[in-house]
Structures are given as C-alpha cells and as structure tokens.
Amino acid sequence: MKRRLVSVPALLLAALLLLATLPLWVVVSAVIDLVRGKFRLPTTRLLAFALAWAWLETCGVLTSFAWWMIGKSGDHRRHYALQRWWARNLLRALGFTCGVHVSVENAEALQPGPVLLFARHASLADSLVSAYVTTTIAGLNPRYVLKKELLADPCLDIVGRRLPNHFLDRGAADSTPELSALSALTAAMDESNVGVIFPEGTRANPVKRASALERIGKSDPARRDRLAGMRHLLPPRPAGAEAMLRGHSTCDVVFAWHVGFEGLDSFSGILRALSKPVPPVRFVMRRVSRSDIPEVSSEMMNASASATFVSWLDEQWSRMDREVDAALSERM
Image (cartoon, rainbow, N blue to C red; front, side, top):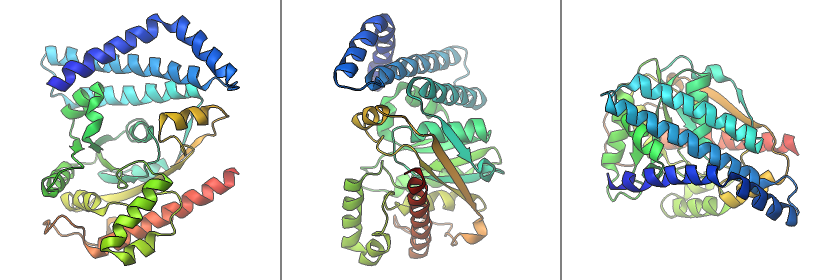
C-alpha cells in the first residue's frame, strides 16, 4: 500500500534520527526552554516521549512484519497481545517523560463483556488511555471505531487493520455503509470484547462546541437548547453509537470521562501543560444496563438515530459534562 511505503520508512528514519541526535536535541531544547523561562523543560520532555513513541512504534511494526513472514498475520491473539504491550509501555513512557499518570476508577464496570464503551474525547492521548484501560486493566479485546486519518500511524495502519476495528470515513457522502460497518463490528462480540467509540467525533474545545451547537440548531433547535449548557464535552453524534448497539442486542454500555487532559488537544497545548506540574489523570467509568437503554431497532431505517435514543444519549452526555465540571472544580 502506497501509504505504508511512506509512513513506515518515515517512522524508522525518525526513530534513528532521534536516537542518533539525542545529545544534540537534549542540549538545544533545554537551552531553548530555559531561555523562555520554561524551567520544567517541556520541549525536552516532549521530545523524549517522541523518542520512546518512535521506538515502541518501530518494535510494533517489526513484530507485525515478522508475524507476516511466518504466516501469522491473521492471528488475533498475537496482535491483541502486541496491542496490550504497546499501550502499557507507551503509557509508562508518558509517565516517565512527561509526568502523566492515570488513575482508573470503577474499572469493574467493564466486566463482564461484551460491552460498549462510549468515551469522552478531549486530548491526543485518549485512544492510548482507553486502550490501556480496556486491554491491561480490564483484560478485554477492544474493537475500535477510529477516524481513517489515524491510518497515517504505521502501527495503527498495520496492526489496527489486522484486528476487528473500523476506520471511519467522516467525509463520506453516504453514511449508510459506514453505519452498517459499525453494526457488523459489534455483531460478533463475545465476553472477551469491548466495542469502543468516541461519540463526540473529535477532540473537544470551545470553538468546536459552539460550531457543533450552531450546526445542530439549524435542524433541531430543541436539541441545541438541551445541550447548550454543556461546558466541557461536545454534543455527541448519536448515529454511530446507535449503530453499534444495533449490532449487538444484549451488551451494556459503559460511559467514560476523564479529567487531567484538558488543553492537550494540540501540541502547543501539550507544551503549555508540561510547563507546570501535571495533575494525575482521573479516568472514571459508569455502566448502564441494556434494560435501561431505549430499544434500538434491529434494522437501520436511515442514517439518523431515533429521537428517543438521541434524547437518552444527550441526557447521559450532559450528566458526564456535569461530572467533569465538578471534578475540575475540585482541582482548583
């Protein structure tokens, strides 16, 4: 595939250059940080994490290549083990280099499977943390819904496509095939699986929140008014979440929110955050029984979610927004 002919060599080159020039970039970045009065050396620490990320990614790509060579590219057990190793060690590297540590609350909410995880999306690290929680903490095999742009990451491109995940085309003119794929993704889930989606569709910030509410208001003013009070989350996009529920008739839903990643939706935001002590990240989950979820039709009539389901999801999302607000207030 043409994409991999670019992304894989670029990854290997980046890993080698970061390692070979380590003494140089440590000194230069530290001097730049100190001159700017950034005494916690955010640029140096972020580059150190980039070095760890590049080599962990490289190990993942080389391991997946070795399995392809011996005819094991379809072995899900091996690839889930690799995903678990990748998430665990990448989170450790994030803690060692950037001081980011995650505290998981109510982890038992993910057991037993199969279950769906509807998670808040606020930072570049959300996919990593959710992978760590589902694979290492809960011991489950996740089935992700991710945007197809993430296929630029070679490890996700190779390992992620060998596992039952779906990379969503958010710009598709007809969303029906995409939603059908989400239903198919969850249809075969068993007790070892968790389906993961970020219903907001993108990382939250005030500009995106205002834009989303404006867009909703053009077609559904009542829904816009219902969600206008949210301060931290984006309005959820209900069609994908409902499609995943449609695919599996009995699984419960776990809602997950976190605090501690605020402002980390861009690299400039990460550098600002690393300029001061990083508070522990709280990852909090709450399980909702399938019997408490509005009934979802077994057939997709159109690309829009039912009004009853939309109202229910909005209520759950507004509750999460209030919980995030309370948790952030406690940190002040």
